[in-house]
Length: 604
Image 1 (tube, rainbow, N blue to C red):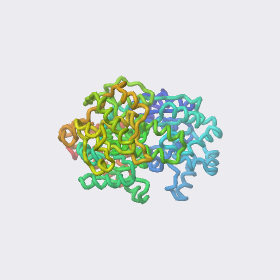
Image 2: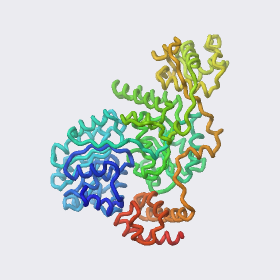
Image 3: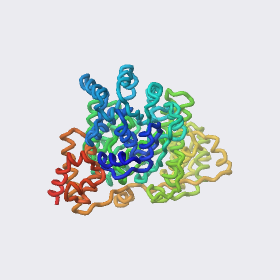
Image 4: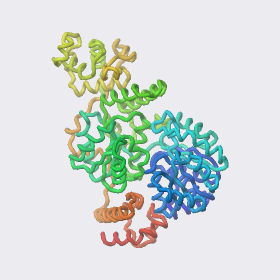
């Protein structure tokens, strides 16, 4: 690695060394090579194109899919003294003209642009007259029509290679299994590009899955009790659900905001800005609150409903702990989630091939949820990455689940579904099994069936677990055309014939009965600071909040929490000491150094 790149890394970005394959990627692009980079969220993808853009002649052009994302990235670069700008619909004509002038005059190091603008004839003509150092295509998985963030404009980005074949291109993503990687390379004409695939593992994330009691709201509030004062994201299935959960959290005294595509755009933008700028805000959102979240100190991502796929789950949970500090990925799901998602997929407008693929992905996620194996081993296996298991930072490793021989219970459940005509949902079938004489049971004469009351040995919670795991295992299907009516699949035949045994996860005790101490102990936690260091850290956060408000920028753009924590622990005596803290480059030292030292002095 040339001394110039390492010097720039230290002087501008405040990092002492490269991580993982960053050095090789940077050198490859500096030398003019094309690259396809797969690196987990928080792994340092941005540096892989920002450094080469600064070291090559010309301006680095970055294709970015979301306005909020590019604006925050540009502001963060400007804080570092980098000449960065963006072109998007938030600029008026005069502002856009000034950015174009700067590009042509060679006054920009990096320019961020949305694919829709880049593909216009006017902008392509502008690029013909500019000096371009490289093309960076961020969130490259958007090119895949089978992915969860498909953007058709991404497929037209081959124009960059066709018109400027001598300019290096680097495509980057944090979410792509092997087929998606092949599709990215093909669709972006990067078949000859060098691939850099980092580990998908996020060791700082603690994965935990619970089985939903009712709506899961009480479980969510209990989980959030361990995260008071922390920023986090709660994902929900629908707009109505988002608003309901946000209201419940607000009633519980939690600083929660809502975000979904159906909201007034000004309110939605204001809520996002508050989440990015303030500490301790919980955003309740649909997946519309997506790729533009660059906030590094998100301490948890919670799902109160089941995501659609493992890729979606991985990307959404990856928004927690981008700073490398401990964070939680928490998911509550129930059988109702499966029915809702199957209905969403099968009744959608996609073609049959796409529907079959989405159903397979949903089934894979269900298998992940019900697995008794290490979560990391299961999750990384989906992306083709082996893991030995026993990660020590997921629920299955921290509290190994008990299993039980569920063969007989499964046969009772499957038989009852068959005897009732495969026309009823789980609640009615359980009523028959448990011998509950409801009006519906009597109406259909199901109290006369041979399966009436044969399941009194298990309670309702246990039976829900049985049915959920039978659906997850593919032995039962929930017919979305008939409001979730359960029906047998061919996989149920060996069990009914006594040819196959089944083992089920034992349903855990209710969360409310565990006690707050145990819940708090199962959350990922930052290491405690010494009392004097905590005072310094709190003082620095208050100062940072003031600076962020004055400049109308997210707080993390000024300094990450991890940088403030390092300052508080080291208690530097002068600017020279302060410059040695990771995350403090020359520009930030000049801009904020004296203020930081003064607040440290006042805190002591």
